[in-house]
Length: 177
View 1 (spheres, rainbow, N blue to C red):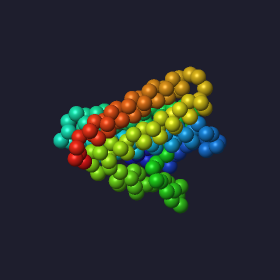
View 2 (tube, one colour; view 1 turned 180 degrees about the horizontal axis):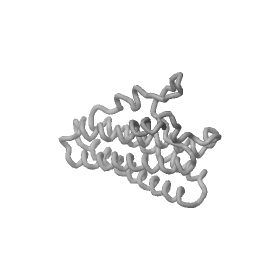
View 3 (cartoon, rainbow, N blue to C red; view 1 turned 120 degrees about the vertical axis):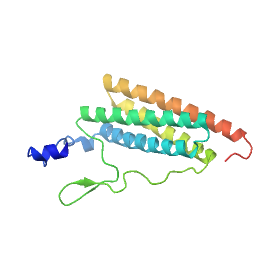
View 4 (cartoon, rainbow, N blue to C red; view 1 turned 135 degrees about the vertical axis):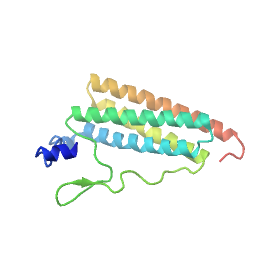
C-alpha cells in the first residue's frame, strides 16, 4: 500500500490528522486513554494465556477476554474517527520531519508472575476501565456512540466478575502460585 501511494506521488500526503481542538475535549481524551488501557489489557491477557497454557479452562477464559479487549480497542478507534480523531501510537516520539515512531509501543513486561498474582492484578485493571467508561458515558450524548460504549461497559463488568470469581477460586487452593 505504501509503495503504491509513493508510486502515485502521494507518499507524503497526510491521510488523517486529529481535528483541531480535540486535544481540549474531555470525551476524546478519555476515549484515547480507554483505548490505550484496552490495548494494554489485551496484551496482558495474552501473556497470561501463554503463562497458564497448562490450565485449559483458565487459558480459554483469558483468551476470550483478550479478544474482547482487542474488539473494543477497534470499536473505540472507529468512534474516534467519527469524532475526527485517531488512536495515538503508543510511546511515540515525533522526529524532526514530523514522523511519529515508537520503539516500544507496549510495555515489555506485565505484573503477575504466577496464577495468583496475575489474577490479583486483573481485577483492578478491569475496575479502572469500568470507571473510565462510566465517566465517559456522562460526557457522551444519547445515540449510537453511547449505545456502543454501554455494550463495552457491560463486557468490562462481566470481565471483572469473572476475574473476581477466578481469584476467589485460586485463593481457596492451598499453596497455589
